[in-house]
Amino acid sequence: MQFIRFSDLCDQGKVAQQRVFIRADLNVPQDETGRITEDTRIRASIPAIQMALDAGAAVMVTSHLGRPKEGEFKPADSLAPVAARLGQLMNRSVRVVANWIDGEFVVAPGEVVLLENCRLNKGEKKNDPELAKKLGALCDIFVHDAFGTAHRAEGTTYGIAETAPIACAGPLLAAEMDAIGKALANPKRPLIAIVAGSKVSTKLTILQSLAKNVDGLIVGGGIANTFMLAAGLKIGKSLAEPDLVNEAKAVIEAMKARGAAVPIPTDVVTAKEFSPTAKAVVKQATEVADDDLILDIGPETAKLLAEQLLKAGTIVWNGPVGVFEFEAFENGTKVIAQAIAESSAFSIAGGGDTLAAIAKYGIEKDVGYISTGGGAFLEVLEGKTLPAFEVLARRAANS
Image (tube, rainbow, N blue to C red; front, side, top):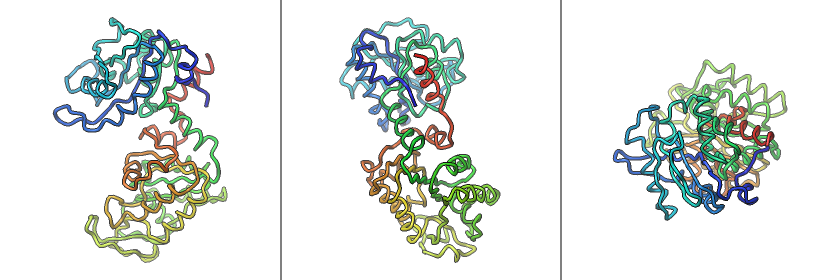
C-alpha cells in the first residue's frame, strides 16, 4: 500500500516552519478524580510529536477522550490531564487550546499545543463537510497517527485527510500499515491465523474472510466449541452458538476445498463449574460429559498446534484459546504463546485479551508486531479496507 510517511517529509526538509496537525490516540483510562491510571498511549504518541518539533514545525495535537456529547463541554471530557502528563514526559510546557475549530490561536514553530477533545466538536463523528474544511485549513500537513481510530471516518481521522494540503501517516500508523501488509497482503507461507473468543457471531465475517486466504485456521474458546459441534462432537454445557453450526461447517468446507484445515481439538480441559478454583480434568474430545464445561484445549491438541505454528511463515493471532486468566486452564494459551515466540515466522497480534496474554507470558519482544488497535485490527482481519488507509493511499496517489 502506497502512502506518504511523515518521517520522509521530515527527512526531505518539508516540515520546517509548517503547521502540523497530528491526530493521536490519547484516550487513556482515568480514575474518578481524573488521574491518569495508565499512560501507554501518551508515551506511544511522543515519537511523532518529537519528530515534528525536531523538524521545526508548529505542532497541534488532538485526540478524543471518552465519549463526550458533541457541543457540550464537561470538565471530565478535558484533555488537560493528558496535556500535563505529556508535558512531564517531554519535559516541556504543553498548553491546551479550547474552541479551536476556527483557528483563532497561534502556535509558534518549535511549540506544541493540545487541541481540546475533538469529539466535542459538532459534526466530528459524522464527518461533517464544513467541519472537514475548517480542519484542513488549520494546517499545512495532517499526520494520522492513531491506528485505534483508523476504522472510523470522522472529522479528525478522515475529513481533514481529504482537505489538508498534505495528508500522511505518522510513525505509529505507518508501522501498523507495514505490519498488516506484511502479514495479510503479501505473507510468507504458510499463513496461520488464530482466532479465538467467546462467540462465533462476533467473528464470523473474520473467519469467512480468512478461510479464503490462510493455510491454517486455529479456533479457540467458545468459537472452538461451536466448531466442535459442527464436527459432530458433544460439548456438554460449554459456551457455544448451536445456531451457527452451519456457518462453522461452511468455513471448514471452504478451508478443505483449498487443501487447508481448521484443526478440531482432539482433547480438552473440562470442569464442572466456571471458577478459578474448579478442578481441571483433561479428556478426549469424544468423552465430554453432559455437565462438563470446556475451558481450554488439551495438552495433546496444544502440542499439535504448537508444531504447526513452528512451521509457519506468518502468524496472525487474535484471542486466547482458553480461560488463561485461571491457572488451571491457561496451558493451551501458554503453549500457543511460547510457540509463537519460538517460531521464525513473522507474527502480528492484536486485541485486548491477546495483549494481556502476551504480557502474562512475557513474549512482547518475540512477537513481530503487536497491534495497538482493537476494532481496527478486527476490521482488517475481516478483509475491510480501513477508511484511514483508503484516504491516505488516495492522497498519496494524487500527490
